[in-house]
Length: 134
Image (cartoon, rainbow, N blue to C red; front, side, top):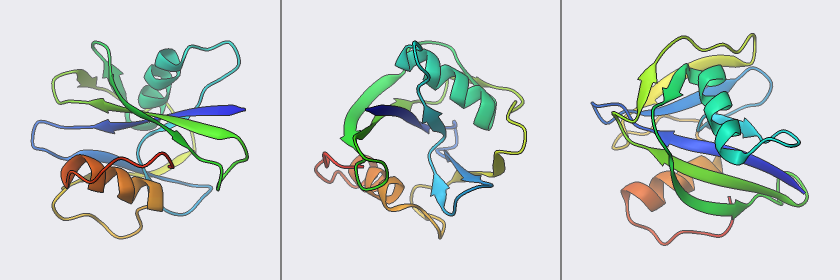
């Protein structure tokens, strides 16, 4: 089994962080894989600093656990929500992994969202019933 973390990170103006990787198409919420022996919360903290330079200043709210079997066999994603004021901005530390960081207006989503990313927006912003699948 593999495990990943992703997060809905909000700014005070309502913008939500999305990233475009250099190695795969589409826009994703920031996050990544949980390493062997690493707690999920630590993986989330590490990935947010690496990908968007966001340092958590408290616990993140777990939104849900999703099956991601269509992408990787026996993969699961822990999805968190981090409101404005619960993180501080810094420099992203990733080298060559992130092509672009976008702060998207949830009311005017950019083109290129991955299907799972689009579903999370619909669940959080439009109140759609949560899916069990990423």
